Length: 256
Ligand SMILES: NC(=O)c1ccc[n+]([C@@H]2O[C@H](COP(=O)([O-])OP(=O)(O)OC[C@H]3O[C@@H](n4cnc5c(N)ncnc54)[C@H](O)[C@@H]3O)[C@@H](O)[C@H]2O)c1
Image 1: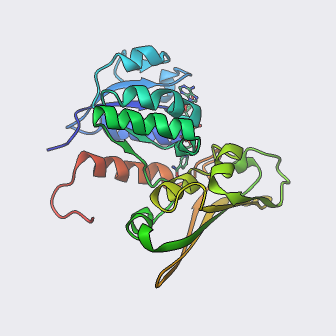
Image 2: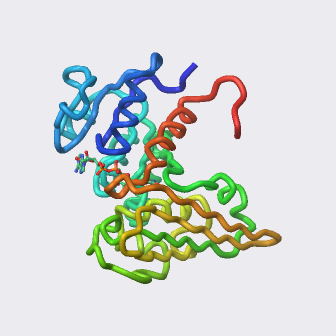
């Protein structure tokens, strides 16, 4: 039995469109709304009439029990606390939570309503292990290597562009370091986690290297995914489907 029946989706780009397609093919779920600033239904051909809106107020007035955001961090910051009054919320643009005011508003809304804010693993792996080992961890360093255009900057950008606390890198590259934010939230937080951003001209892949040390442990996690041409790599839309299915509740043998 699925835990949710009515789902709203914010953002219908690379990640959102895959999630929308998955919900439309699910027999247990109703797609209650799709909120996107560019309401181009042609790119979402199977969408039921009336589901697509560009009006946040209309989306907020639609009854749902789960909202999935795959738009931009500013939208998460503006809308997550409102939706959390009546529904659970899963946010892909989790760099938004590096802003203490946004994190506080989200935590307050969860505490007041009893609803949950989910951080999907997105482009990175091993958030479960980092979260479970949190009490033992001494250092966490995340290095992301992408081409300039994948970072939203000039094509010939090269070398280390940032090295410092994850809280700062989230403000500097809000659309590119969601992996860093998710790791910080799972582990030792935005101020203790160290972030590096490196540009390599012409690089087709998006690479993340996570180095963790702690009492009796040392982990080295490397992830590489082909760029889909924007801020997202080939793996993330697929991983999003897995995350949504886990939120819905498992069936049969479940890996925990
Ligand atoms: N957690 C992760 O590991 C991870 C990985 C990749 C991308 N992301 C993040 O997920 C989000 C979606 O990524 P994507 O590749 O699908 O992006 P995309 O650019 O393909 O799609 C974003 C969609 O959001 C819509 N949008 C933008 N501003 C909006 C607004 N103010 N109101 C309503 N809709 C708005 C756009 O019109 C677009 O359709 C981004 O914030 C991205 O940084 C997270």
